Image (cartoon, rainbow, N blue to C red; front, side, top):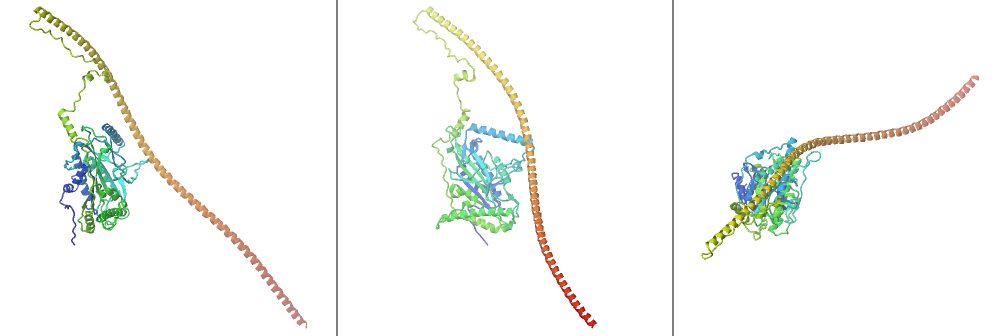
Length: 622
């Protein structure tokens, strides 16, 4: 049997991960940088290589790490500092000044150091991830479509759709008051009221500054993702995973120095990479119990995806009444409803397992994939950057100016330098420019030589006097300046002493704080042990109460049963006593009657015997 299917691109087992990425995902990354949304599915039967295509290995990365590599290679120096952009609760972003971002960064880093110290003291070192120790081969592709007058930030989130419930793979494990890990809560799908986009509420979004940071979170999510061993795959995914890359960009100001703190000018684009769980037949995987339920939910969600695309195709072909697309029958289709309605590009990579046993499933997969090509998704709106408001190339010009001039020269007025009242010192004012009086001027016919000589001598005397006055004034100013410098040095020594004392006090406070933290950690550890003991005692008490209640109930039932037996015995005794009395009375009455009858018969016989004797006696006499 020969079957033929037509697709846009076909990759063989000889094609590299790089070739698949360049053809399929690289255009989506370029759209991401240009402010457009995209969605990429990996679809196929179980054990067909979907996760390998999406994630790959450290030395042979798949689509997901390569997307991150290209994004960070492209934005380069235009990457914003951490914590300038913050996610809000409505699928948007907030922006804050750099000084607030720096304060938040210091606070978070201090918190992390404290947690690490506490873990070390409690003997709970973090177990390193072996996958991060492997040599990773990055993708060196760089795109030129980055806006050099904008700052960029990358945020990631990682979720899974399991049994039609959404769980956050990056959320920290929650611990109850007894120190036990609680089950994760499912998330809800909401709609962005501003952009009318579906999103997962209360999901953790992490800002990452490199591919390595992002991959560390990917491995963390992969370890938490639900897997199970089947006959076909020893690590079969039991859920659909969705990895979101959100790129946030905001323009610099007119000088190209600071990011504009205008939330309305922020552009957010998203690339969603979906690793669908493989469709499977329980008869081939021998799934039972929970795995059978998981397989049923996987197949139902994939069937809903089929139904949505087929309904869209039927509506576009026309000829019949428009049908309602069943997005809400599955959380997976509801989450990506906007993509199918034109919010961004949709691409699908179909993975085929060449096993002959999977022939029927592969035919079904390829038939559906070929059908989806007929679905026309409306092209998303082009993102317009208003270049009329701000001058293009402003940041590049500013950086060039800094390199040439060694930084912007900020000239300080002379008066501000010499009169530093802001520091508490009263320095002498700068004297005006010192000018000597000019020599007298005369022509060839003006006066005699004696007069000229006297005029010159007078000018020289005047200059000498002004020089003495200037030297005297300079000496006075020098003495005042020396006094000011001595006072400044004295105050500086006092400040050094105070600083030293403050440093010693701070060191002592830090040591005391460390001791207090150690004691707090010890008390928390003891408290945790006591809570566990209390938990055990509560469980034992609950078990004892249950057993006592069961014993009391059994005793009560036994007492009631004994009481009923006694009442039954008394009733039987009364009944038997009445029957015996009646029988005795009846027997006595019958006995009396029999005695009377016997007596009567005896009397009759005696009477007859007497008569016979009388007759016999009479005969003898004769």
